[in-house]
Amino acid sequence: MMGDNGRLRITKNLVTLERGAEELLLANSFYLQPLYFRKGRDYVRRFLDALAGLNTREEMLAALSGGSGLLDLLITHRILVPEADKDGHDGSELASFKGPRTNQSGMSIYLLLSQSCNFGCIYCLNGTKTYKTGENLKMSEEVAFRGVEKSLASLAAGGRLEVAFFGGEPLLNWDLAKRVIEHCESELKPRYSDKEVTYHITSNLSFLPKDLIEWAKKYNISFLCDIDGPEDIHNRCRPYKGGAGSYSDVSGNVRKLIDAGLDVSLRATVTSINQHRMTEVAAHHRSIGGRGSAFVPVNPVNSDEDILNDNLLPDPRVLIDGLVEVYRSKIYSSENLFPFSIYSTKIVPGAKTVMGCGAPYGNTPVVDVNGDAYPCIYLVGIKKFFMGNVLRDDYPDTGLLDRMMDLLHVDNIEECKSCSWRYICGGGCPVGRLTVLDNPTVTPGVKDYCTRISCDYTRKILELLFWELAEEASQSAGEAASRESSVAKDAVRMIRC
Image (cartoon, rainbow, N blue to C red; front, side):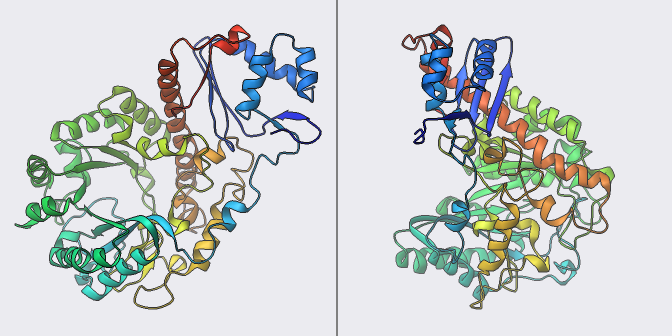
């Protein structure tokens, strides 16, 4: 791994975490292979400091007698890298994805079956102008079929397509959802027999079509439903249009689906209203029977690009503390607790995350009732993110996706360039960067909120996951074979993370 001259240096992408009096975790975010020390933190830190003025492995060994085991660990885990190693982005990640978005391994296509809704949520993403919410718009069969077919065609052999019925409220157009499923089962699955198709519904579940449970059990449909907390919170945040409370209907229908053996995950949009009660919300989700629990900071802009009132935004400090409390409560394991469930996939050995989400890759297209497509559910209706119409040959506009890649790559984001975490977090959720920061009506408070949600919030999630995986690896390692120094003996390669 060393260059021709054998000269070494400490990686410029060094992530360092400390806990208690002795524990230390080190990782090179560009070549992720974390190294955990159960003991000897101060010694390791002094050891690294001493290496700063040295060059080759031989020079280091001569100056630091008895430290060959630790030195080799640091080299193996890329804490020490060859002097000539770029140890950072060289453009290859972007080049490999630019151009036609084909041969993808996975995709979720969101079909806006209806752009109307029977709720009047206080933070609704659907702008009245872009969604035309008063016109009762519903998707046609042609649009839905074409969108699914184009997505399937872009997948590689063995790829997986999730067809997500979305809205508005998708169950207002339940008949179309059934026709899409029938089309997939009878026409598309035989044609694309080497690819997998699954079905999902994101719904407020305020009502259940009489045959929904039958269809969901037959075709293994999963569900996601928003319940922002116990009845007092939920009714305040997610009332019916006109103001009546929806909690009783929603919670009752969730229980019906769960009692039928169906997979229902629950989500809470975190606002100033429920930020102090997040653990209570998670416990409530568990009491209802939700398979998983998700906490999503409220998006401060809707599809009309109207900025949400500052007073509705959660305080990032309170939000982060609340999420930590939920995580430590173990009401849900991390694999069933969003966003931990997503970020855990970013810290496996060898992983490198250069963007905060899959939208620039074309992995999460959203199709509206007219067939117009956008890269993400948070970008629907915003003209500059229009990526073509599924009924025409201009879809997908890979030029738009390429521009998003250029904009969102962590080495192209000014505030991320010098951060050692950037190849693990990918810059966090980019919605604020895409839709808020250049909005002429945005306030300083909203800007700060978006920045901290992208950075502080994301980093705290990753820190907790790193320590969780360090503990798992340590337990798995048990009493490892002895090494040359007592410090190296207490190092655990986080091979399970």
